Amino acid sequence: MMGQPESVQWIGDVDGCLRLLDQTLLPLELRYVACHDVDAVWEAIKNLRVRGAPAIGIAAAYGVCLGLRNADETEPELFDQLQQVTTHLTGSRPTAVNLFWALDRMRAAADRLRGRATSREIRQALLLEAQAIHAEDRATCHAIGRCGTTLLPDPARVLTHCNAGGLATSEYGTALSVIFTAWDQGRRVEVFVDETRPLLQGARLTAWELTQREIPTTLICDSMAAQVMKEGRVDAVITGADRIAANGDAANKIGTYGLAVLARAHGVPFYIAAPTNSFDLSIASGEHIVIEERAAEEITENFGRRTAPVGVHTYNPAFDVTPARLISAIITERGIIQPVNRETIRENVSGQRTISK
Ligand code: MRU
Image 1 (spheres, protein in one colour):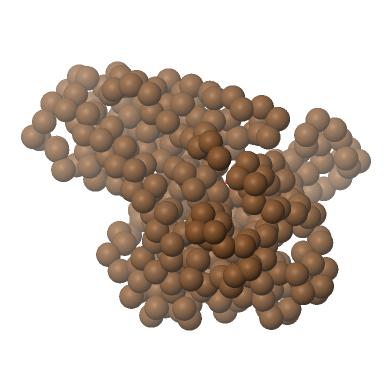
Image 2: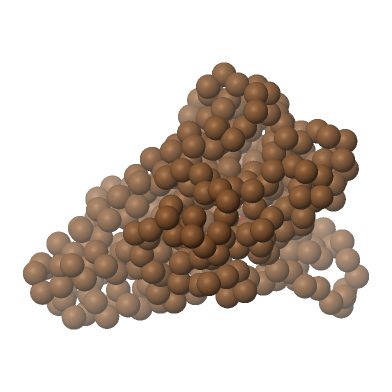
């Protein structure tokens, strides 16, 4: 298979620009948007041109570089601007912790040079930091895949939700990395893909990534998962995560919690695959995770056609939280967390920095 197009690319040197694969247009159109300033990156994150927790973090890190583009003046001005730019980017989407983690890392990289470098040198160091975040994510995704395959039987019939693939990361993905790795190892894999209402990340993006690789793929509506499990056609459910609390409660795309309940009811293991930078050890449980609410139109008139009466009330949470007790294991780049509890998480994720709000 030809390499999948990258969702995030930095073009050029410190005065370069960010190129994002516009995921709102897939699978019909493969088009890139160029971001030359921080507002364009904010807009791309907010409107899901770039989406998926790790990809959002990487894009935001490059967004900091763009936001400081004209900050070649004095150091205090650069640090003022850095504060403004990072605050602005944190307001784009609230749930994926990778955004806050990446921005913290960028601030820390600049702080290390405070009083010791010119503004341009600090900007150059920030680009290197963003590129390091990007490169580390590649290695992380491949490591998650290698760890996760050990949990799968051969043949394996896996059900997934939303998109936790190459598009949602630097490449290869988290949940999909487990599937891609098993496939690349020559194992037999078959995937059920939830379409993922309301924005169809499963149908538009995950089904696209899997069929590009010619992995046997069956698209189902979200409401069909129970029936498919009851028919005994699923060996494991694997999804990604946007934020995992210290006790293992995990936020992911709306519908994930329901799938975990279904998996438990049918005796199917439910796995989360996520990098350690998706953990937020500063929060004790999922109760403290901010769930993004998105526009009513995503439910009532998405994809160009009104499908509900004008004036109807809607509720559109973009994520839900799966309690740790329903998660059979969490797959990270460092290994498998099983059972999922405060102690096993602390052991696996120790060294992870606390994220500032
Ligand atoms: O709203 P989205 O499309 O950004 O939601 C994405 C998800 O819920 C993914 O499963 C999660 O970010 C993990 S991506 C590796």
